[in-house]
Length: 263
Image 1 (tube, rainbow, N blue to C red):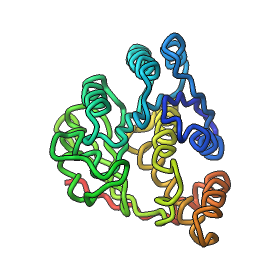
Image 2: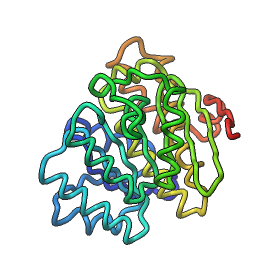
Image 3: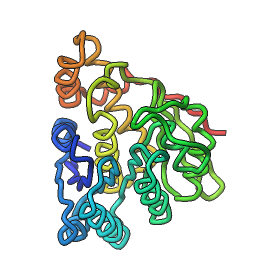
Image 4: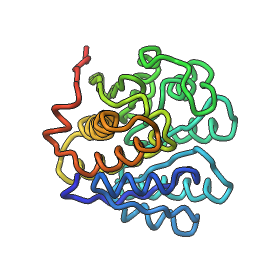
């Protein structure tokens, strides 16, 4: 991914734009925040990956998201759906549900968001999950089958699932640190890193499933490293960003535990 330096087109929450850009740069990708309706489609055509994050949508941004998704589909650009706080709010829930049929390469969300997006229950408390990751496994598999893409459920343990063409792949990813929940934008930035890894993996001819696992491993390993040196969220945020930049692939592999849970 660092060698490819993928260009990631982020249509994302206004609250997290800077941290998302900082995280992409630290991880080895190049960020862009182009969400005007007259430009979003053109930019999605040249990007390596696209992030659609519904965290704080404006009318104009929604138009840009529609344009970017259509362009990504036309040009074979992998795009990631981050359905922030779906379930409790009708607008974003309708948008995210409608986009399921537009071929997202991956969905990245917490357990409550996955449950709500699959129509299997209500959402969580705002952006916070009130469901265990294990509860979201069946809804995640359903979403993966419907979209033909990858679904990643984040929590104390993450699970990444593929369920397409009668073949199911499931990988548990154990990493991270509780302070990741105390820093704004860590989950939203993970969606952008997922788009970066997807773009790089497709360039290298590697599977989408492996790309999504690698994105979660990189972000989680950086969280583990930051937690070793930071006592609170302020220092943790800086240490996490530094770790995203400095960790080697070998250090990431040594830090993260992967478990194949495929049937």
